[in-house]
Length: 258
Image (cartoon, rainbow, N blue to C red; front, side):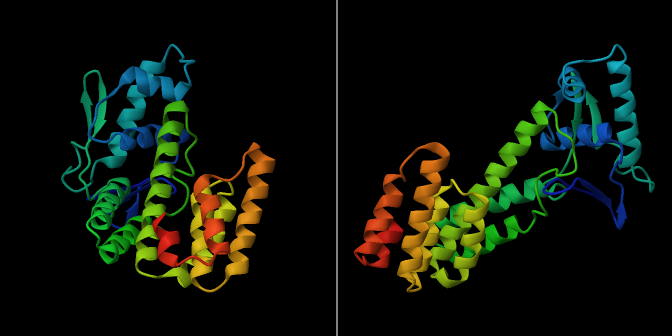
């Protein structure tokens, strides 16, 4: 079976062999097909992506050559069991994958399962599922592929789903009382996402829960300064409430439930 990885650098693994195409256009074409696997992508859409709207006269023939080259890479040497993985389907092409072949599909399944467990008040299962899903990421999505506008939009969407999964996992770990373990991670995340008020609020709560009230209030002062300097805004009502609750030494359940 061929495994495809896009949650990080692009990889195509067949058995124990790395069969990832090296040519930039082939990598971009494969990435776009994988991001919409099991769905037909029109030839015009693929050509527009590959040549950024400035298509040469030979675009159609060149695209057919790229498809042929991808088929050679994906077709197994042993009996051709992968011969139907990349198909011509009017008005374009489709790459067929199972739920186990593409890491992004596995990630989506684990996040959905984790969210459902959290909704069912089962934070332990939710945390396990979401940890497993996030562990599939090996870096930025398709980090070594030069994207056109359509591919860039898909990559941005993938990164947003990654952040959503991370927030859900933090919620699950909060419900399990893992405040001390989360402080270091939340500090790193707020440094990476300095305008994300939700992450700053979670860091304040985690610090307060571990008896570091002064540090929690320092986080509020820092994010307030950043918001004023970067976007000219005051902290959200939720963040202000967290600060006031910490100042009043409110019970943790009041902070965490707001």
